[in-house]
Length: 340
Image (cartoon, rainbow, N blue to C red; front, side, top):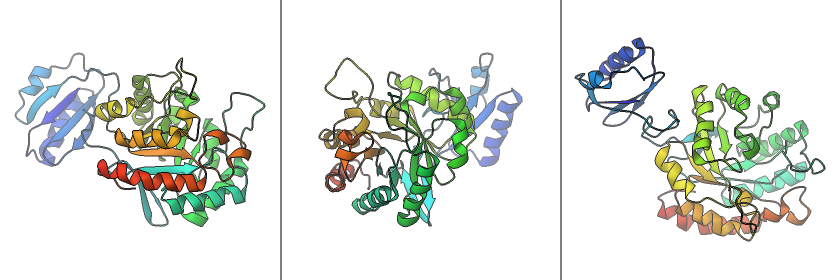
């Protein structure tokens, strides 16, 4: 349920209404805009007398939220959420009018590989470095990642370039070695690993939450709700394609999910054109479409030697191809009044 206060209500008056709600056993999420303050009520509101609170002299209106997700709902938080990460005194942002570009290899393979790619994507304009060290693979015989050693190599690349790190976490205990990782990625296969989501709700790091292979957007938002309900509001939603009957691409990019998520939620939304298409030749077009649809960022796989990559080389751009794409994207970002 949402309680919208009248324009001009002071902080003291708003706090008075908050206390009234809390006395009724509800927790209150306060969102202050330039003109109005919105109170999001969390808890059992079935016996809540909306008419009575609507008559309060400080209340403009009361709205019942129909969707099952509450804290991720734009009604609870009308303004867009931006996720900031600071390294070496530089603020890197996803959302809030800035097009966040995350780039790097599917898997960390060696120090020279990850550091070389980090330098290349930073020069091209990327603001974040991605690199997998724990890899969920369909086949048990495929490369599973370097593990803890890969985290050390990512840290070396971060030290050299200053780029914040994005890497996938598969199990709760792996948090212990993720001190240098700035944004924790939850992969498609773990989107509904609720114990993991609850633990990340108690974590202070931003979480990049990927949509599951066969998950609805509502299920994605409910997964985000698990994290936010735990106290961590720094969640980034990621559309990475879903499994359909079509076979020409690795997955089917649900581009319509981007404006829908932006409409329903205040959380930043990014797109992964690499996993969505599975084909490097299709990545540029999918990336442009994502930005034109209003995405707040992209996560793109880049490898210096795709033909010999340990994993997903077929969907990885070379550094020159990535640099060329970012030059083209500036035109699309300008249309959305965003900056690279």
